Image 1 (cartoon, rainbow, N blue to C red):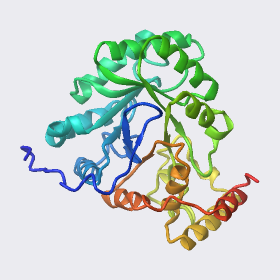
Image 2 (tube, rainbow, N blue to C red):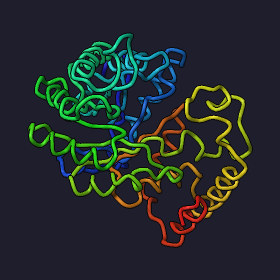
Image 3 (tube, rainbow, N blue to C red):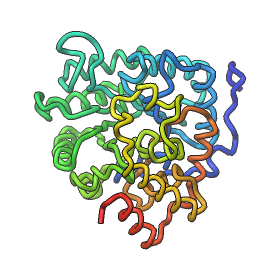
Length: 336
């Protein structure tokens, strides 16, 4: 038993589903835990610990970080490092730990975007903050319009060659740029396994920008983030904006009160009604929808308490939809 007293549940692998990331040998859990929110300097360390323990006890092996996650930037990695040292070091070989670089992180011209200088410096900083020897996946967090794709992908290949990452990933790249990235990384003999992109019932960008088709053809996995549209696809906003929500507190750049229009409220009401008919909460149906066709390898959930993780994992085994249900969902959100 680890010194912290935490001993992972011996049955942790019995209920989780694991999918190959594209054509690689890497298996990712169907549900993964993202640390974009609720793991920063202002959040409860005890709650973070309970969420990570709960996730791993239920078979979630993939923990997703980025250099700028917080707030403040870097604090999510630092907190994860403390939790890793306290609870999870004995389980390192059972974990997929990922981080990313590409958003603003430090002053000057090198703390942002996708140059070789920026990515490799950020990687070293992230390893120091987490106390890890390597990341399982290291991502370019977003495409850089001012840097040649060959340079950005070359930096990812160098990270793997140096033993600081096992696999390369990209995030927020569309279908065309993903195909080009795959070609470059293949020439560099770098294992490229995943594109992480926003995807939900309300946000169909990977269908519209070609990523879904390209990933399938190129043998690249897809990890979907914001499957609940930052909380819109839950029961949280059905009656308006709760005082303690991220929307009310202004903690989200993209989730503003102006998003919650009368039309959006009606969409959420109808989706919630359909979810109830399926015997699921709105959040559970939204997660199931992302996983429905096997094109998404893993869906990243965010959580503010351990119980949410358990509720989300309960969707496994019920990700099937009838053609009428799928048609109805598309009709509600204006896709037909």
